[in-house]
Image: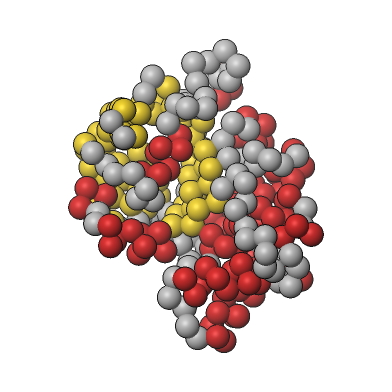
Length: 235
């Protein structure tokens, strides 16, 4: 099984401030890993480093076959085509339909063939179970449906990795479970790795996978959730 992320002894800065140090992280294809930690501890900075928003200053890092230490600005669009990003707040374009949201991304990433564009849109909407919403405006969708469209958008370029930043943060528990099942199906059937930053301990409890905790400016694996109290732990 191939590695999608391999980070060794990394230090991450936001501007001149050190955010994370001694970061060691690996993720294999079709693996799901959670990242937990208090707001402001560096979860989002980690994700930004992985998709090239901030640089890797110290240490070594390979993400979807790109060497982060050697990453040029001109490489970033190609890196991001191999990574799907799912945000908490959906970030759908509200002035156009679901289909036009997806067409916009495909055209922006180099797709030109109209038939191939329409076929890919049908494929990703089928994956998330919303084939019948292609002509619907985002505001007419429920929160869970909007997040599934966001996941469909992340899948357009057949990514090797999905980075999900609090993808259930704005959703009720039942809808959160639906979104988690979608992500698990994608990991299994599309062989896509998923790294998910979350505060939602109920999701972690119901859908157990490897857990990394951000604390004391570094990242450590949580050995046992059965003995882990998120309310008293320094996370």
